[in-house]
Image (cartoon, rainbow, N blue to C red; front, side, top):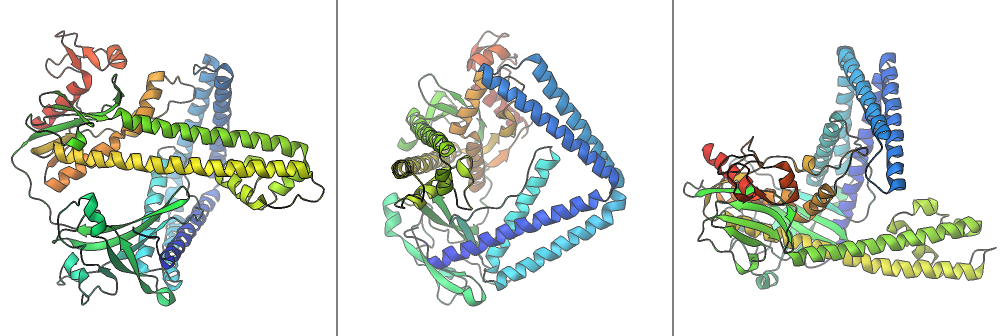
Length: 588
């Protein structure tokens, strides 16, 4: 975006926000209706009571373990406490199992009532769609909000089915949001190409007009040309009395292909510290690239770890043609291990930048912690001060002012106000001055951390995209791993030990972002016509040349492991990548 979004667009986003919270309210009412249907059966009520009691015992046992760790300063838990937590969890699992079985047995009798509740929910959502459009929200944005809500409901149900707590929540309006424009096309109508949408006579001129210069051209633009090729897009927002066409100035990231068939345009706005960042996304159908028949197999193993010379290894790719040389921009992100093997590295300079931002965040946390502690002490000694600072209905006292936003609102509200009647003038001035000083310093740290983090994440994403394109330049097949990253980096239970190596691995995973690397690799393959394969059952703990099993202890201590069968010292990540490549070649 070249400028702030028009006020009309922000108002449209607010109407979408209101609709989103309304859908959450309707979903919670539907859940309460379902619970009421089940509650009509005494056996279900009794079983649910057993589950709730078991859950309370689990929480009490976990709290005891957490307090024990805090008191001892160690992650090791005494056997009695660990046994108590495991026992309470087993009891909770058994209670849940009995409840599920009971619901399964009674479902044929309750099914008509549940079906009626689902039909009523669908009818309410349909009526909500009509009301939202009548209230002024464009129908395409309504569809986008409802679609996102349905995705959230499915995720919530999946988490609950897996035994995890999940619930939809209301969101506070902070100015962030998204609106959508959809371009409908009849069967025999022309493609919604950039040139057609740029024409003033386009049949979609009352929905979307793409300015001249956003049409066909090179797929990527030099940074200096992006400003020169800045244009304006005009799109439809609102309905009924709020319907209008608004102009949005944009700076191109890339030009649209001439054969693109535009289906949707999304305008997104998010908050970055005290400022706003907005962008326009164009969704289009493009012809599928021809499958690449000639080329080798490139395999990507996502093994992240800290490197002795600095930086973090994000993955290892094998099968890279030896004559392929990285560009100047990628040299700090790629290291050639041996012919055909490339190490993808997050540079040490990038890691140090992230660590500096962590220090900034820690400074914010320490400052707000010290301020809250000081305010609590003052409010405990002076009742009038607590009433003056936290008398607003939005404030919940010092304990409720945990977030920086709440305390910043208090600081802004009391700045420059006179001392309340019956209060100490000197103390009041000290409190107001300290709150204002903290607010200004915190705002600066907030800006530093938020903008710095966004720049680093964007730089890493850009590097990964270029790396994926470079790796697949001469490949016909790319092999990626299909295992779940969440299961690998999941925190252990409170009663279990949390080894230092696993804690370091979790922190490095956030820096390396192997999931992003895999996603970008798959997207680049699909764009270039490279076939993606995900071999299953590929071993990661064997030597790819002789098949010898690598020692688990050595694998945990170092990336370089000596094979007990052939005696060769190998890089375990490189060996795992070659095993993946061989499995992909065997699959054809």
